[in-house]
Amino acid sequence: MSSLDALDRSLLEELNVDARRSHRDIARRLNVSPTTVSHRIEALEREGLIRGYVPLLQDEALGWDLHAVVGIRISKGRLREVEERLSKDERAYAIYDVTGDYDALVIARFRDRRDLDRWVKHALQDPNIERTNTQVILNRVKEERRVPLPSRSKRADE
Image (cartoon, rainbow, N blue to C red; front, side, top):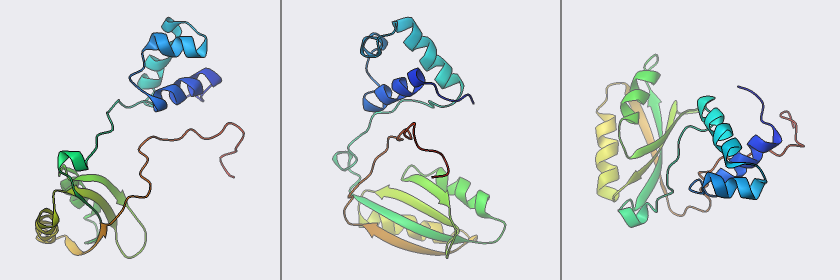
């Protein structure tokens, strides 16, 4: 993947603020042609830097009232297999391989406590899941889904 030039960075910053903004509006804001904006965005998409566009939905308004972080200990050699199965559940919106007492960390949203209870009990029926540790999220202090662009002046090793 090529390195970002100033225009690419500016385009990504504009899209990070509002990805629904028209190419014409972005071009006007950046003082370039709409064709340049379109070509640059297409190139960023081809390179995989932009993987898609999604609205930021208000989950509680859609009935997802409970969020939890679940640490999962998985039988040796079965990590990918178990994570693949867990990833098919729409309630799990992030699954990470982690270090420490657990092998995987699942961040998921649930309708209510009963929904969480059913999910955990179902997960524990998997013979390759040895143990779980569930933490219910009481308040989301910060949850930013946009990826920040590193400042141009900072080096990667700082």
